[in-house]
Length: 234
Image: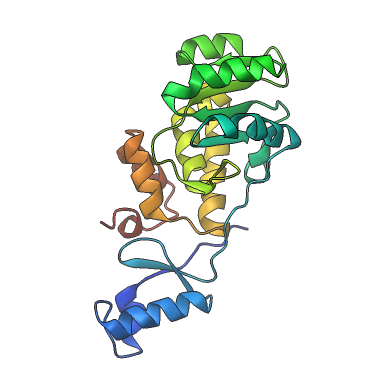
């Protein structure tokens, strides 16, 4: 059974304490309640009631190997595989398609280094159609593609993406590039918001950089799982 999260405004939370959100006492109280695990701010106005629970993506041994090869070459990278998000999907993925994301200018360098390290089935992102035509011949495809600037990472040193980034990437590329069905995406979004804390500000900022926020917010609103006021809070 899916448990719907409870959201309250800072004003509602602080009413019982006799303080306002824009006062020093109000800001202190919100900070204290957060440290005590009672609330988690998710936007400028709204908080999620409950402790701060985050989805910790577990990289496979192959993902870790790729990070060790790539990290010394670039300022930032993100490495994650389709199987690592299986806890959030209905249909478990067996193909270990892995995305190695680096700055656009670093793609060729990383691609050549991975090939020199004898990493199998490495594909350089050129255009979506070309990638689709070439992946799937192996269980261990690795796609080197562009890391969008200021992508939200849970652990920048290890190149682990945040759940906010995963949601946006799956919404944009999931069905075409990764083969994630619409039903899986719907289940993932519901699981993400019910079981974990999603920072709407982080998700919105990244989705806008990927030019998809308006479509994504409409999709989430359609699920009637998160109040529109929370999603559209400035």
